[in-house]
Length: 258
Ligand code: DAK
Image 1: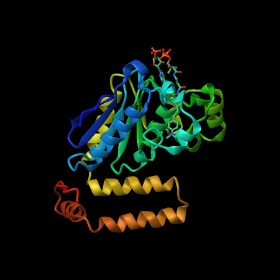
Image 2: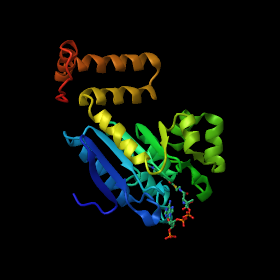
Image 3: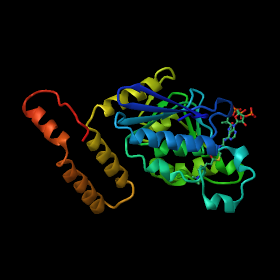
């Protein structure tokens, strides 16, 4: 598949990397770029040799938001009708663990796209913000919801109402970001973490991701029931037999990811 706005790599065993690549527009997310991101992630999701995904931009910008020039002439009916730009739920259907490696600007839809990933590794220069109000709109891909869950109501209000940016260190403090590294190290560290996850049994990793993401949506008793279903499911996998046998025989497990 030939892409025009993204680059694809497999930088380590089991790791698929998608890099946003519209440097002149600070990786502004137009329809074409967004469609390519979803298609590439979905292709890695179907690829049995890949077990953990990394989504990144450039050192200067993860993404400065949705493409304002493209949105400028778009009316409410077109937005409501959907299409490539608005169907970001595709990102939520990726089953394999997905790490955002964020440096520089992560604004508007860029911040929302990073927050839709399962973990964020940031560079020291990362800046997270929801500046939509400065162009007459508001966050539309989860900014008011996920940011509020991460930083609490008061600070989320300031971020969305007063265009307050979060530094990488602040984002880490609030649990939005896992780790902060210097600019020359954040991507390799994200890939290192992805490689470690890719070395785990793949079905179990997907079951963990699914259950933790449910924790954000369900009440505790429903969440515990969901977790138990996935737990029981893993007792039907070859990797459960292999993992427990390997433990008893005091040898490393050879995962089948089945
Ligand atoms: N869109 C289009 N072009 C952009 C852009 C953007 N968001 N951000 C930057 N660019 C372009 C600039 O126009 C400029 O292009 P030229 O003029 O050179 O052709 C180039 O990138 C460099 O930008 P600057 O010259 O502005 O660079 P500075 O370093 O001075 O400033 C900045 C960097 C990031 C502070 C500034 O560019 C900026 O404020 N950008 C806009 C940030 C913003 O407002 N983002 C939020 C957009 S609204 C949804 C999904 C997504 C969304 C909503 C719904 N659904 C699924 C329903 C998302 C909405 C948004 O993100």
